[in-house]
Length: 245
Image 1 (cartoon, helix red, strand yellow):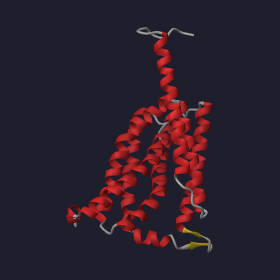
Image 2 (image 1 turned 90 degrees about the vertical axis):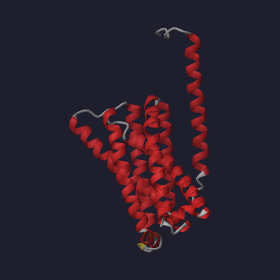
Image 3 (image 1 turned 60 degrees about the vertical axis):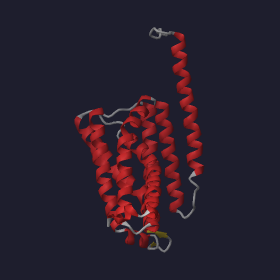
Image 4 (image 1 turned 180 degrees about the vertical axis):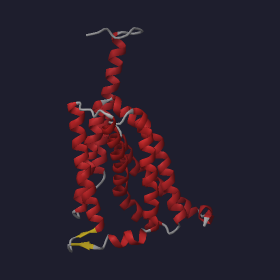
């Protein structure tokens, strides 16, 4: 089984799959950062790890049931939509709801308090991480089994991407929490992803470049604005704290 790692072609496939999984990981990192943002800081890492670990187990299970997943792309519901289409539609609509709700909470500065609210939010965060990871995994699983029949290569790529997402989720989440404008931009990106999932669930392809390039440009502009604000404050009071306004 592990002889696949000695085959240059399989190693090239592994590198390609890791790259695809890491691109998927960008969406996952944003989702994880958002759905855990209203948890107490001490609970965030725990929710990230549990949610991602359970999602990893389910995704590996999906890989071993990949033949059914490929057939599900042709299994029609009401003679129009396949099971895959329904998954994309439900996931996209939920992402639209979640992103809109979080934008409202952020703009209105609403916070949930109380032990019961925190416990409910913790459980909800884990479930949302798992559900949305499954939605994003459908295409990647079908692509992976189309590239290679070596399950050890596919599972390795999934595990490597899991480690990468887990490593970057905390610092990126903290950065988003510290900068409300970045958080709203991330939520807007998730809105775009939700719209894309709904459109693709309705049999219309949307080139990913139409989503990632504008949002990447907007992020670059926002980072330049943050740098400008930092330099302006530093220039106003070098070596001293900013004077109050």
